[in-house]
Length: 180
Image (cartoon, rainbow, N blue to C red; front, side, top):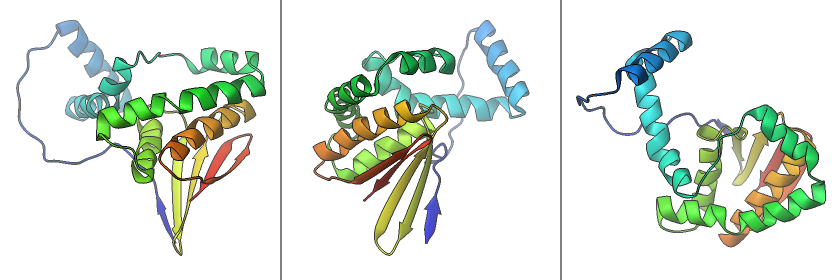
Protein backbone atom coordinates (compact mmCIF):
# COMPACT_ATOMS: atom_id res chain seq x y z
CA UNK A 1 0.00 0.00 0.00
CA UNK A 2 1.36 3.43 -0.90
CA UNK A 3 0.18 6.87 0.03
CA UNK A 4 0.97 9.94 -2.04
CA UNK A 5 0.63 13.59 -1.07
CA UNK A 6 1.33 16.26 -3.62
CA UNK A 7 3.23 19.39 -2.73
CA UNK A 8 4.70 22.06 -4.97
CA UNK A 9 6.57 20.43 -7.79
CA UNK A 10 10.32 20.56 -7.57
CA UNK A 11 10.96 19.54 -11.16
CA UNK A 12 13.91 20.90 -13.04
CA UNK A 13 17.11 22.47 -11.84
CA UNK A 14 17.35 26.00 -10.58
CA UNK A 15 18.86 28.68 -12.79
CA UNK A 16 20.49 31.91 -11.68
CA UNK A 17 18.62 34.87 -13.16
CA UNK A 18 18.58 38.55 -12.30
CA UNK A 19 15.45 40.73 -12.45
CA UNK A 20 14.53 44.29 -11.69
CA UNK A 21 11.49 44.31 -9.43
CA UNK A 22 9.17 46.91 -7.97
CA UNK A 23 10.53 47.95 -4.56
CA UNK A 24 7.14 47.91 -2.85
CA UNK A 25 6.42 44.40 -4.18
CA UNK A 26 9.84 43.16 -3.05
CA UNK A 27 9.30 44.56 0.45
CA UNK A 28 5.91 42.85 0.69
CA UNK A 29 7.35 39.52 -0.49
CA UNK A 30 10.28 39.81 1.93
CA UNK A 31 7.84 40.53 4.77
CA UNK A 32 5.81 37.44 3.83
CA UNK A 33 8.96 35.28 3.62
CA UNK A 34 9.92 36.47 7.11
CA UNK A 35 6.40 35.72 8.39
CA UNK A 36 6.58 32.18 6.99
CA UNK A 37 10.15 31.78 8.23
CA UNK A 38 11.42 30.86 4.77
CA UNK A 39 13.98 32.48 2.51
CA UNK A 40 13.01 35.11 -0.03
CA UNK A 41 14.39 32.79 -2.72
CA UNK A 42 12.11 29.94 -1.60
CA UNK A 43 9.01 32.15 -1.58
CA UNK A 44 9.76 33.64 -4.99
CA UNK A 45 10.26 30.13 -6.41
CA UNK A 46 6.96 29.00 -4.89
CA UNK A 47 5.18 31.97 -6.44
CA UNK A 48 6.73 31.34 -9.85
CA UNK A 49 5.86 27.63 -9.73
CA UNK A 50 2.29 28.44 -8.69
CA UNK A 51 1.90 30.85 -11.60
CA UNK A 52 3.60 28.66 -14.21
CA UNK A 53 1.78 25.46 -13.22
CA UNK A 54 -1.68 26.85 -12.53
CA UNK A 55 -2.19 30.60 -12.27
CA UNK A 56 -1.48 31.47 -15.88
CA UNK A 57 -4.17 29.00 -17.03
CA UNK A 58 -6.84 30.07 -14.53
CA UNK A 59 -6.18 33.74 -15.25
CA UNK A 60 -7.11 33.15 -18.90
CA UNK A 61 -10.48 31.75 -17.77
CA UNK A 62 -11.25 34.66 -15.46
CA UNK A 63 -10.77 32.85 -12.15
CA UNK A 64 -11.89 34.72 -9.05
CA UNK A 65 -10.13 35.05 -5.71
CA UNK A 66 -12.52 34.91 -2.76
CA UNK A 67 -11.97 34.62 0.95
CA UNK A 68 -13.07 31.34 2.50
CA UNK A 69 -15.80 33.15 4.47
CA UNK A 70 -17.21 34.74 1.31
CA UNK A 71 -17.17 31.40 -0.47
CA UNK A 72 -18.87 29.70 2.49
CA UNK A 73 -21.63 32.32 2.32
CA UNK A 74 -22.23 31.42 -1.35
CA UNK A 75 -22.39 27.71 -0.49
CA UNK A 76 -24.87 28.32 2.34
CA UNK A 77 -27.11 30.39 0.07
CA UNK A 78 -27.36 27.73 -2.65
CA UNK A 79 -29.46 24.59 -2.55
CA UNK A 80 -27.76 21.22 -2.94
CA UNK A 81 -29.73 20.62 -6.14
CA UNK A 82 -28.58 23.93 -7.64
CA UNK A 83 -24.98 23.25 -6.65
CA UNK A 84 -25.08 19.76 -8.18
CA UNK A 85 -26.60 21.07 -11.41
CA UNK A 86 -24.14 23.97 -11.63
CA UNK A 87 -21.23 21.65 -10.86
CA UNK A 88 -22.22 19.22 -13.62
CA UNK A 89 -22.55 22.08 -16.10
CA UNK A 90 -19.22 23.65 -15.12
CA UNK A 91 -17.55 20.22 -14.94
CA UNK A 92 -18.33 19.66 -18.62
CA UNK A 93 -16.43 22.76 -19.73
CA UNK A 94 -14.01 24.37 -17.25
CA UNK A 95 -11.81 21.32 -16.58
CA UNK A 96 -11.64 20.53 -20.30
CA UNK A 97 -10.50 24.09 -21.05
CA UNK A 98 -7.83 24.10 -18.33
CA UNK A 99 -6.63 20.58 -19.03
CA UNK A 100 -6.28 21.05 -22.78
CA UNK A 101 -4.62 24.45 -22.31
CA UNK A 102 -2.01 22.93 -20.01
CA UNK A 103 -1.57 19.34 -21.26
CA UNK A 104 -3.05 19.43 -24.77
CA UNK A 105 -5.19 16.33 -24.33
CA UNK A 106 -7.75 14.77 -22.00
CA UNK A 107 -7.07 11.39 -20.41
CA UNK A 108 -8.04 9.91 -17.03
CA UNK A 109 -4.43 10.30 -15.85
CA UNK A 110 -4.36 13.94 -16.83
CA UNK A 111 -7.69 14.56 -15.07
CA UNK A 112 -6.01 13.12 -11.99
CA UNK A 113 -3.15 15.61 -12.46
CA UNK A 114 -5.77 18.36 -12.66
CA UNK A 115 -7.36 17.13 -9.41
CA UNK A 116 -3.90 17.25 -7.79
CA UNK A 117 -3.34 20.78 -9.12
CA UNK A 118 -6.63 21.96 -7.62
CA UNK A 119 -5.27 20.84 -4.26
CA UNK A 120 -1.73 22.16 -4.64
CA UNK A 121 -2.48 25.50 -6.24
CA UNK A 122 -6.15 26.38 -5.68
CA UNK A 123 -6.38 25.05 -2.09
CA UNK A 124 -9.81 23.56 -2.76
CA UNK A 125 -9.13 20.48 -0.61
CA UNK A 126 -6.39 18.27 0.83
CA UNK A 127 -5.47 15.54 -1.66
CA UNK A 128 -4.63 11.97 -0.65
CA UNK A 129 -4.07 8.98 -2.90
CA UNK A 130 -3.90 5.31 -1.92
CA UNK A 131 -2.89 2.53 -4.28
CA UNK A 132 -3.51 -1.04 -3.23
CA UNK A 133 -3.49 -4.09 -5.49
CA UNK A 134 -4.23 -2.08 -8.65
CA UNK A 135 -7.06 -0.17 -6.99
CA UNK A 136 -6.69 3.59 -6.63
CA UNK A 137 -8.59 5.63 -4.06
CA UNK A 138 -8.48 9.42 -4.16
CA UNK A 139 -9.71 11.25 -1.07
CA UNK A 140 -10.34 14.99 -1.14
CA UNK A 141 -10.67 16.34 2.41
CA UNK A 142 -12.04 19.79 3.20
CA UNK A 143 -13.72 21.88 5.90
CA UNK A 144 -16.51 23.43 3.79
CA UNK A 145 -19.34 21.04 4.59
CA UNK A 146 -21.67 18.73 2.68
CA UNK A 147 -22.60 21.20 -0.06
CA UNK A 148 -18.95 21.54 -1.09
CA UNK A 149 -18.73 17.74 -1.23
CA UNK A 150 -21.77 17.70 -3.52
CA UNK A 151 -20.18 20.30 -5.78
CA UNK A 152 -16.80 18.55 -5.97
CA UNK A 153 -18.33 15.13 -6.62
CA UNK A 154 -20.39 16.42 -9.53
CA UNK A 155 -17.77 18.80 -10.97
CA UNK A 156 -14.89 16.33 -10.93
CA UNK A 157 -17.17 13.41 -11.80
CA UNK A 158 -17.96 15.19 -15.09
CA UNK A 159 -14.26 15.75 -15.76
CA UNK A 160 -13.54 12.04 -15.31
CA UNK A 161 -16.54 11.16 -17.50
CA UNK A 162 -15.28 13.45 -20.27
CA UNK A 163 -11.99 11.53 -20.13
CA UNK A 164 -13.83 8.23 -20.57
CA UNK A 165 -13.81 6.87 -17.03
CA UNK A 166 -16.55 6.58 -14.45
CA UNK A 167 -15.16 6.42 -10.91
CA UNK A 168 -17.26 5.25 -8.00
CA UNK A 169 -17.88 8.39 -5.91
CA UNK A 170 -18.89 8.70 -2.27
CA UNK A 171 -19.20 11.83 -0.15
CA UNK A 172 -19.38 12.92 3.45
CA UNK A 173 -19.58 16.31 5.13
CA UNK A 174 -15.81 16.72 4.83
CA UNK A 175 -14.62 14.44 2.06
CA UNK A 176 -15.15 13.20 -1.46
CA UNK A 177 -13.80 9.76 -2.34
CA UNK A 178 -13.14 8.61 -5.89
CA UNK A 179 -12.47 4.91 -6.43
CA UNK A 180 -10.75 4.23 -9.74
